[in-house]
Length: 111
Image (cartoon, rainbow, N blue to C red; front, side, top):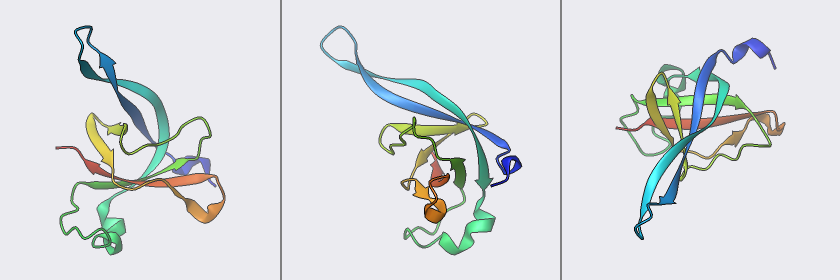
């Protein structure tokens, strides 16, 4: 694994329900971590476009990260920010090569 292949910085955010003090809940977001990653855009992943049954994949990113034991990625509570744009997870983390070193996650832009 080359250290320089992770050259982009991405933010991992988490949403949580917090009591508002009046018997209800509000949704809050908090920054979990900043991680170095490798971005793979749609041009390099055209063969995967129809695997999910979708034809419009212009707002899709694939990221590769180092696998960390202290972070658990959950598609229901986690989202990512890159350059101020929010992305949600559409796939669970894939263990690349089953070596427990790197993971790959497919993201889509939140509109």
